[in-house]
Image (cartoon, rainbow, N blue to C red):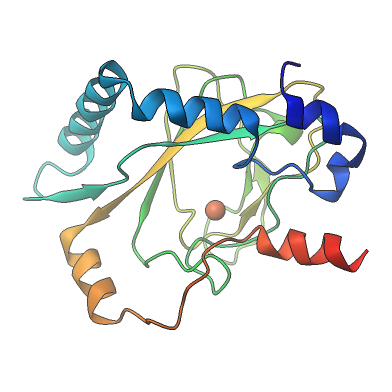
Length: 193
Ligand SMILES: [Fe+2]
């Protein structure tokens, strides 16, 4: 694989040293899309479709300015169990999650998620290129397992908020909350080893 980070760290991947949002390939992707008008136009067009399909009665929606890319490397753990709205992640209540698989996602190179908040019936979601997955990452626990599929998983995801939820969030915003990364748990575990 042509990732310098992957090749440097591949012996330690099961310790979570290479997570799904930080590597040289992520930098290449983000540098590209942030400087590429063609991508921005496509993304905005896509968000308009989401708006029309899912929220036609809303006057406004808020959307993530750029999608996040997830690269789950072979043997990598990526993310521990969390809800996006929990005290580790600190995302606003009410956010809507959308995921677009670029490569096929199945078994251990996909996301394990429960069907309802706290139901704990975790299942890996099987998705293929061309699908879109709308899910409640905000209140349902989700995580990755060590990627044993021997294939890199690539997916994009983004979050949307409705005006009503955004206003509630702003009203209750806690200035003391500065961290919003569930992977900090993995970092602490690695430091302790
Ligand atoms: Fe999450």
